[in-house]
Structure formats: structure tokens, C-alpha cells
Length: 260
Ligand SMILES: [Ca+2]
Ligand SMILES: [Ca+2]
Image (cartoon, rainbow, N blue to C red):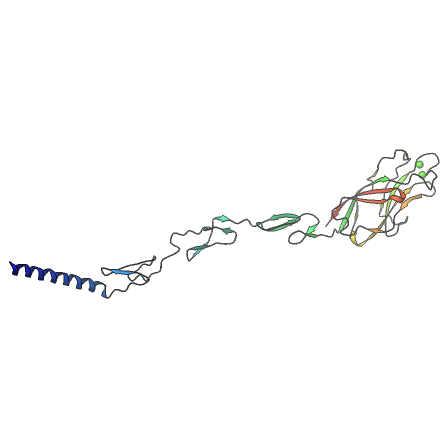
């Protein structure tokens, strides 16, 4: 009986020895890279590596979708211009961060309002031409140095404009005459005939204006101005230009438009 037991124990020991030597053999020639471990002769890989020796790097772009022509690089979408987001599916606002001071942003570029220029529409534009569309006389001298303008009725008033000094020659603008204006209640004298008048290169020129009283023989001067300029930027984008002289009770308003 003792002999049988001894033989059995020896057999079990032999089997264990064979088994253990078999396990050593299966992984003896197996190399598992990148943190992989050999189990029963096969590499069990870590960190997403694959391959018989865990030698194939994980595909970081597997399962990553890049829309609108984006490319996956190391698991991150590289988006084409105009798109953003993890999957390039968010449309970028091309006007985000674009500040158009005097204008509107269209597709990332500033569309400037009239009279403004520059990449952000902050630069005043020099008007090239000025167009006079209407003349209004709000005030004028009520007497001719104390005497009435006309002996028996009211003054007969017209407006004129010259280049340079005021004079009867070469009027740039000459309105019709409003006859027998009621001195006590003249209202606003509105002139639109012979208008509009276009003044080219306006900022480079000098002008003078006159309010005249029409007489059959020789017209009287109610008021004439010294030459002045409509130069940039004093009148930038203004549509009503006031010419005033309180010493002579003068107020004229020119209604204008600008061309750039
Ligand atoms: Ca008169
Ligand atoms: Ca007269």
C-alpha cells in the first residue's frame, strides 16, 4: 500500500513538472512589446496595441469622423477653412471678431457705409463731388442800410454762387427771383430751379455765395460771403450745410448730396 502511494505521488510530481516545463516553453520564444504580456504563448496587448507581438500601434482615428473634408490626424480632426468642432461639422462665422466701425461684415469682409473706407470702415472718405439740390434762405437783411429795398413793395430776392470771389460773372448757380417778399413775414424762401448743380472735386475748390435784390437797373447786394471751402472733413456726410452770418442776419441752407 505504501509503495502504491509513493508511486502515485511520484507520478503527480512528474505530471506537475511536465506541466510547469510546458508553460515555460510556450512563452519562452514569445516577445510582447508595448506593455503586452505573454499568456499561454500568446501576447495579451495593452494600451490599444495589437499584432502578434503587440507591435501594431493603435489607430487613434478609428471611429473618428471628420466631416466636410476634414482629415483625422492622431485622432483629432484637422478641419478645412470655415469649419470647426471635434468633427468639423460646425460652420465658423466668418464675421466673428470682425468689427466694421461704419459698415457691415459680409463673409468676413467689411462693406463700408457711404463716406467711409478702410478695412474696418473707420477711415473718412473724401467726397469727390457735391450736389446742391435745394437752396433755402431763412434770414436776410430786412433793410438796405436802413432804407427799404424797394420803394413801393418788398425785395426781389435771388441766390447766386461763384467759384472764388463773388462776382456777376460765371455764376456756378443762379436761382430764379422771388419777387416782392413780405419783409414782415417772409417765411422760408425755397429755390429749386436750375438745380441740382454738381460741383466736382469740391474739397479742392473755394466758393462764395451771394443774396441779391433784383432791380431793373442795377441789382443790390444783400450779402456776399468771402470765399470758403466745403473741405473734408467739416461737412462729412452732412446733407444740410448752413451758411450763417449773424452780423448781416444771414442764414442760408444748402441741401446737398455727396458722391464718393
Ligand atoms: Ca420788389
Ligand atoms: Ca427790387
